[in-house]
Image 1 (spheres, rainbow, N blue to C red):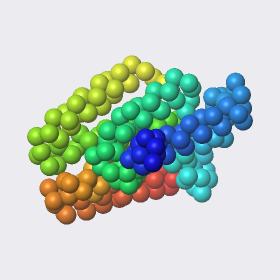
Image 2 (image 1 turned 45 degrees about the vertical axis):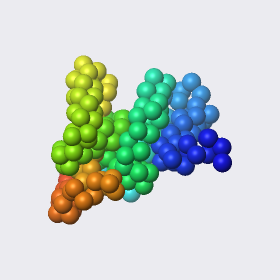
Image 3 (image 1 turned 90 degrees about the vertical axis):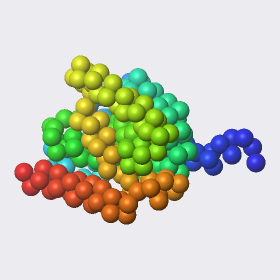
Image 4 (image 1 turned 135 degrees about the horizontal axis):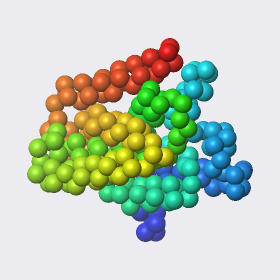
Length: 227
């Protein structure tokens, strides 16, 4: 087995998600060329536009697809390399399946919060999911009281807060998606905790956090669609 194969097996979730993200980004350009990031083309490629979901509830898939769609080269490259370099470290801790679940579900939660609060905006990007996995890492220290994870968790908490502070001065950035992704990561850290930390978290905590995730997500969707 080559070093690449070993690396891929170890970080199969990170590399698979990165490959999908890259594939979608290249497809945007193959399909639309220099107009790939025009709003109408972003919409057709699956960007989040809440008013479309309200009018056509069957388009609920728009809460998932924006995770893999990007608005520009800088946007794509920042998220793509953040996923590869930081994602591998977090996947090492959570394991591939749990990492994949947190990445996807926290990204969806970030899109749901944007849908709920700003349905008229067009938004996309993997940053909802990235904030989710960062927040899940930050939450582990709080849940387990493990000194090592508390130290790591504080670093990720600072990273999240610093980025949110910067977002305040960037009106074009979907801050609600970032906040929602972070909330999703916080709620998913317990039910998808790493195997080595399972015994440190109460079963009631795992169930409660996951129930809060599901109920709050469904409420936001239903209330927004019902108007």
